[in-house]
Length: 85
Image 1 (cartoon, rainbow, N blue to C red):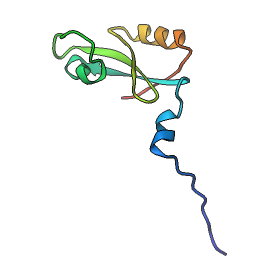
Image 2: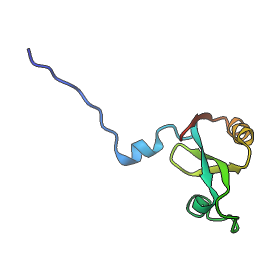
Image 3: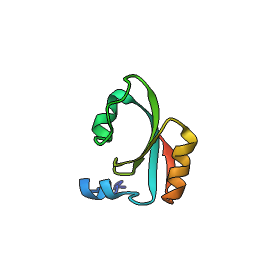
C-alpha cells in the first residue's frame, strides 16, 4: 500500500495575505526596536517596554504602554487578536 500525502503550498504573497483584515497579533516591544516597525515615531527613551499590535502581515497598527489599549484598538479595527512572545 502506497502512502501519499497531498500538500498545499502557499506562495509568499498568499502567505503574507493570510488573515489580512481579520487577524492581528500583539506582543511586547522595546523602544530600541521601534524604528523599524514604527518609522514615524519620534526618538524615545531606550529600553522601555511597550505593547504593539501588528496586522497579520506585520504592518504596525497600534502602540501603547497598556495592554488593554491594544485590545481596544484591535476591537475598534474588528480584528481577532493573538499574542506572540
